[in-house]
Structures are given as C-alpha cells and as structure tokens.
Image (cartoon, rainbow, N blue to C red):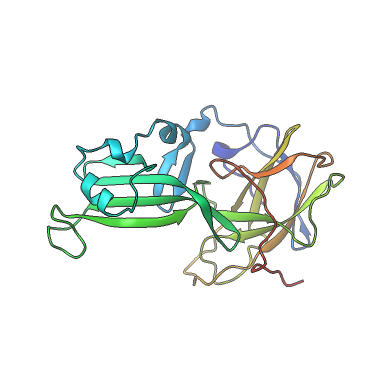
Length: 256
C-alpha cells in the first residue's frame, strides 16, 4: 500500500487496510498541508480550489466577457453558474445539482459547462465569433491525488456500520478505465478520526497501459478504526464539500 500525497494527508491519521483478504501494514501519513486552499478539485477537466469557488463571480455578471453570449446560449438557465475559469479564450463554470445525478454509486452533485473560442466563425458548432461548447454535464468535485486516480466509496450493503464496530466494511469503485477489473492491491486510504466524524480519503493506483472502459466492479476493503465508531458520521473527505457515505446501490455487486 502506498502513502497518500502530503497535499491531502490528514494530521495524525493511521490506517490499516484489508483488500480482498490481504491485510496491509499500519501506515502513518504525513502532516496536513500548510495551505489546504491550494488543493485542486477536478470536475471533468475544470480545476478549481475551494478558495476560488468562494471568490468566483456568477457568469451572469460577466456581460463583457467575449464568451458570455455563447455560454448563455448553451444553458437553459444562467442562474447559479460560478465562473471558476475566466480566460480570454475560455469560460468555465460549475453549479450545484439539486437533485444530484447518481451513476454506479457516484453522487455527481455538480454540473460543469465550458465554452472556448476554438474555431473560425461558422466552423462546426461554433457561434458567429468562433465560440463553442467543449465540456458539459454532471460531475463531482474530487480532490486531485498525486499519482492516484479517483474512486467512489460506499458502504458494504451486507455489513452496515454499527456503533460498536471498530472496523468499516467498504466498497471502492475505481473511476478510471480498468478493463472491468477490480482495484485489488491498488487502493490507498487515509483516515482522520475526530469526536464527531470519520473522514476518509481514498485513491487508486492506476493500471499501466491502455485499458478499455466498461464499468468497474467494486473492490471490498476493510478499514480499522482506533476506537468504536459510535455515532460519528462517515464522510468522503476527497469530495468538495465532503459527503456522507451511503450504502451501495442495488446495481453494484461483488462476487463473494
């Protein structure tokens, strides 16, 4: 098992991980970053920090941007879009989705829309000024982990957590293409335990070479806790904002 990068390490977090029956050693991860605001979250190519989200203007306020008209034409409602990427030839924005879109257990609670000036007027889908939509749809805001890919983390439906549990039975679904294989022996986890919360950051070491992209099966893991779970909330802290872990949906299954 590998260490999570120090940009997302949690102070004092120690983990013991079991993946498909293989018990990994206890791991002491590094100190938390001096500037957590520098962590970038990715939304299908739209990269943003928490500070940038907090300071972002709404697209509706950018009437003088050359891509504003193309952006407005690409959405059914301009309200709520936060302009997190504002460049001369690119305008990228995100907004919360309510209700969220769910796919293979992944709660996609944001939408992104990007317009760019790429073509000449009249080329393809470009508007009169050469602007076109280059990215759109639901996504998650998930922290970028140096050298590790994103993963969905859900509760094992056959072993829901109880207050006296000192271990958690979880399923991890790799989001990258993996030719439909589980992430056995490639999962990295860090855990921060507080009085009110158990915060998990999970990443997957990607496979080498080209991979096909069918849906990946869940990988069962067991995470040991320093003390019984009690009434503490279980959260995926790689998400922005962190979300509470939910039970795996019916469409996910593991070969036992």
